[in-house]
Structure formats: structure tokens, C-alpha cells
Length: 212
Image (cartoon, rainbow, N blue to C red; front, side, top):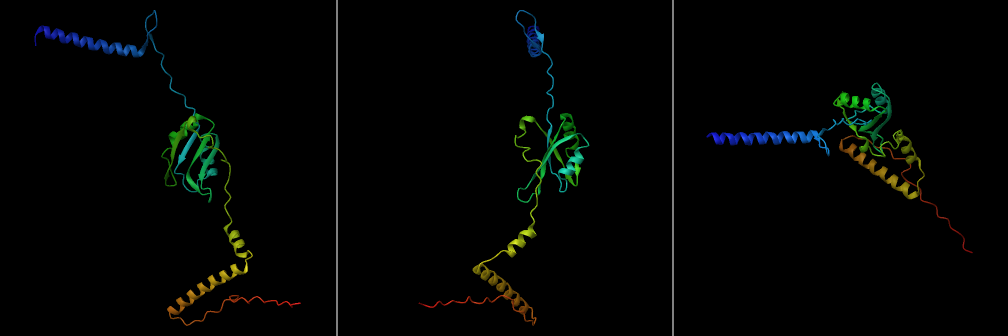
């Protein structure tokens, strides 16, 4: 390579480095009209204002009262809501918790994410205020009242039935009784099952009216 070629290469390299430095300065400096460039102010990081946390993989037995006692050690808890089945009221193993202080919420999210609790790894994430649903806390303090199934069965059993309903009920009972007798005979057991009381209903009496 000759001397002229070396000089040309040096010029190209100097131009490339100067263009890169100009780009960096343009990114760091704001040009002003009629004056020299001024350095841009450093941008402050956005402040954390999230106070609502999503909690997933909640174990069975870790309900609102237990959650309030457990997470209350970090700071004051405002509201807690566990997603539940509308019919049975059973937990769906995820929920939401709101703290008064965003700093406390950030500490809880950092320290409790992937925390092992009753053989479950908790999943804890911050929810930004713009992503909090407006109806998230609707009815959060409602407590599901479980149904008394024994009382419902008792009412169903003791309700008044019409003659046709009673007849169908007796037919079902007799059908089950016949199947039980067949199983007993098939097992080689000599046993006579007693008759079911009330299986035969007396026919309604016909009232005759005298013709005038």
C-alpha cells in the first residue's frame, strides 16, 4: 500500500470517528438558537405508585384472615380479596391485596415472589394503577355462606306430594328392592325380604250420588 493510500485511509477513519462523536453529542446536548449546545437534564426514574398486588397459587386454608395476619407484618393492609367460586364459595387459589404504602407493596412483591408456603410457590406481582380494574374491589368484604345441604334434603324429603308423585316414588323404591332381592338370590342366600310398608296404596273410593 502506497503513501497516498495510507493518507486516504487515515482521512476516512478520522471522518468516521468525528461523525460518531457528533452523534453522541447531539444525543447528549440540546442545541439552542443563537447559543451553544446545552446538556440535557438527567431523567429521573418513574416513581412507584402501585399498591395492589396479585397473589397466585394460594394454598388451601390460607384465606382472608390468615392473609391479613401474615402480610400485616410488612405494613398496613387496606383490602384483601380472594377469588371464589360463585356457587360453592371455594377458593380459586388466587387473589389481590392492597397496601397503604407503595414502598411496602414493592417490598412484599420482591420478598414474597416464589416464596414456598404449604408446598405452594406463591406468585406475587405488582399491578400498576392504570391496570387495576375499577370493579376489582366490588364486594371484597362479602363472606360466602355455605348451603345447609342436610336442611335442603330434609325439606325435599318432607315436602307434600301429589298422588302421582307418591306413586312414582313407591315404584322407584320397589324397583330398587327387586334388584336387591335378585342380588341376594344370586349370592345363594336364602332370605325373604320383608314387604315394604306403604307400597300398596288403597284405591280411592268412588262416591255415588243419588240421581234425583
